[in-house]
Structure formats: structure tokens, C-alpha cells
Image (cartoon, rainbow, N blue to C red; front, side, top):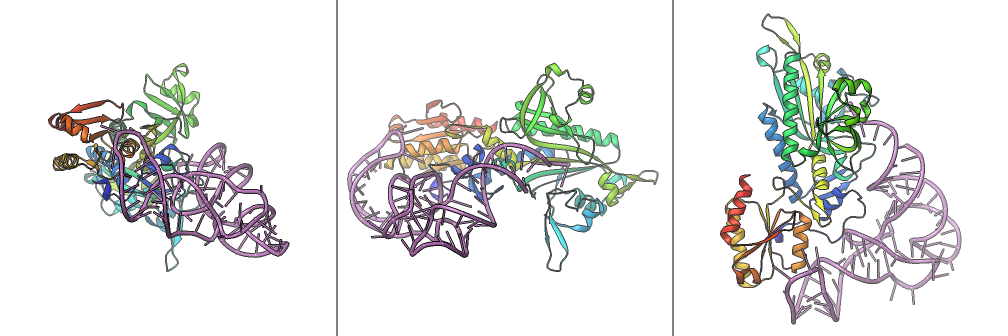
Length: 420
RNA sequence: CGGGGUGUGGCGCAGUGGCUAGCGCGCCGCGUUCGGGACGCGGAGGUCGGAGGUUCAAGUCCUCUCACCCCGACCA
């Protein structure tokens, strides 16, 4: 993509109405645009990033047998009344409205009821189970206070998966499988080493649940982590009973701030019972279906990653979620320079490499500063100087290492980056 | 929802009740520049968040209200 064609722009200043680092950087670099508190638009570069994050999640969900669907955001009142969750006193996150005919509807903040209801049409026999269904969809939550940029929004992109199992054993096996898939997701996103499976309260579903918490000083949660055992305990369930249950020594725990980047629940038959989803077993008997739900806040993850992978010059995206692997900074408009930069851009594009071409007629300082603010992993400088040396100057965003490379060396490096 | 803070061109900001509301960035035109956000000249762009009030006179004072940020509560 050529920067002269990109409508979004970087700014010399960061917005004054944001304090969180993720929002300040993402807005300054032109990845997102603020619509209102807790509601953001994704601009071209931001859309690529969030899609890449969503894709990693999608791949791991598919790998454990998840089937992707897309459910409606508009929710009818009747279904939620069956489970007792329509009342604002029970769920205060609802955005509610009315149809033209006066009937009440809500904007989906979670989907246990509709997915369970939907499956009544398709699941009758033990032969139909288990089923694992997920979606990546915009959720609406009427947060009392939106904050921290993308980390706590009122409109958020979320992956929610629901499992439907024949019995406890089958459910528990999948719960474990999903846990491992989650850990893989965080590892691929580059935060595996600071993300902990964390024991947490189950809310109204069950007594306990598991969260995935990424250590961060901007986190809203306080957890106690056992780094050796690679597990955490949320402050809200930090008590002797839980410690004994997990077999952890209080001495080995460290108090940390963390961001909840995932949450998985065992739902039991709470919703299947309420909505009447059952199956017939081999012997012709009607049996309960056991459910689980598994959420990952995709937009929150983008905020966390922006926050985490950044320095005083701007964003520092990991290669697998960066909007492009390379940004070509063409310094000057001189004929040979332009020709070489154009050629390199076309070559990389034809190779299928994601590359941003800074073909703007602006000064060198601005191009280099922007390449850093945008956080593109590698900057390739093409200038009169590099043309004369018959080399490309390649700079690593993360550590500022700069190397002069021939065209072949550069292409080889790019090839190695894209195969990893 | 309680407490605190902030609203002035696209962005960042200044503005003691008193002239036609300024500055920097950005934007448009011309020229000189060209490896870390250059410079000269010319130009466009404003319901001062909104409503009401006080006053000869309000961006500035008062009341109400809306929005945004932070702390807290909340987060199934």
C-alpha cells in the first residue's frame, strides 16, 4: 500500500482526550478513530491488525474443532426471559431498544441463550454431539465507565465459543483442550510468557472459572501468580480454600496487575435446561446437555498488544500482527531512487509480502519518524546514498539494528520472515 | 453512580469583562530546500461544547446541561 493513497494520517501530537497509551498511540498513528467514549472505528491499518489478531484466534479455534458462525446482534426478549437474564437488575450491561411495533429487543452482549435455542433445531441425538461453535462478533455492553482505550469499550470485538457435550467427562476434556488452545493463542501473539491461566470466580454460572491474565501495569485486575507453576489466582477468590485446592504455597505467590484477555466457564446445564436443549442417548433416554463458554476480547487484545509492544517512539508490532512487515522509506524524489524504490515495492508486493511504501513527498525526518510511530517491523531506506552503494538500508524497529543489504540479501531476509 | 479535571479552526494550545479571538502544527498556492518532523512570501479555515442569565459590553462572570479524561464503585 502506498502512503499517498492511504487516507489516514499520522499526527505530530497525540490526542488530548485520551490518557491510555494504547489509544494515544493508535490514534496518533492513524490506526483507530474515536467515535465516543469506549467506541472506536478501525482505520485501514487498524483493520488489518485486528483482522490478524482475529485470524490467529480463528485458526486455533478451528484447530480444536470449532465451527465458526455469525449470530445476530439484535436479541429478542423472550429467550432471555427464559433464563432470567433479561431484567436489568440481573444484567446491567444491556443496551435495549424497541422495534417499530413496540416489542423490546436488546443488543447482544453475550450469546448463551440464542445459541442454545438455535441448536434445538439441529441437535436431538447423541450422534449430534459434541458440538463446538464460535463466532467473532461485535458485542455491546453498556459499561458504567469506558476506559483505557480499547481495553474497556462499550462496543467490542469478541470471540465467543460455546461447547455442548454429552456428559461431564466429555465437557472436561474439551475444557482442557480449549485451555491449551487459548495458551497457544497468547503465545502466537507474543505474550505467552506473561499470560497466566488464572483461577477466578464463576459469577452466576458456577462457583469458579478460569481467566487468562496478561501481566501489565495498566491492568484492572489484581492476581497472585506462581511463576514456576505458571498459574494465577484472581484476588477475588484468593483464600485458603482455593490455595489448598490448587496446592500452591503462599510463599511462592507474587501480587501482580493484569489484563483479562480471556475467560472460560463451565456452564453445566444452566442454559440447556432453561431453554430445553436435550438429547436422546443410545438407550432412547432423554439426557441433559452440558455447556461451556469461552471468550476472548479481540479488541481488548489489540489494545493490550499496542500498549505492550511500544516504546517512546511509538508502536512496535510483532511480525505476525503488524499491518505490514516492511515499510519502504524513499528519501528524495531523484529518478534512480524512485525507480529502485518502485521496483522493490512491486517486487515485494508480487511476492505476496505485506509492504507499505512511503512514497510521499515529505522530508526524511518525517518518513523515519513515521516508520517508527507506525511500528512496522522493518524499515527499508532507499535514497541517493543507498542507490550509490547499491545496497538497501534495513532497520529493525525493535532494536534499531541497521544493516546494509544487497537486493538478494534483503529478499532472502524477507523470505525467512514470512515463512516463520 | 459519587469525587476531581478539561471543552477555543482538522490537531496541540494561549487568551486580565473592553478594538475585527490569537499562536504552533497541519492544509492550499509560488519559490528555495531535501538522511531525523526545513524556510520565505501569500492564502483558506472559528455557532469559543450547548441553552439561559448578569452587564453598556461575555471566550472570560452566574445557573443549568452535554461531552471527554482520571480516581472510586461496577464489570454476571
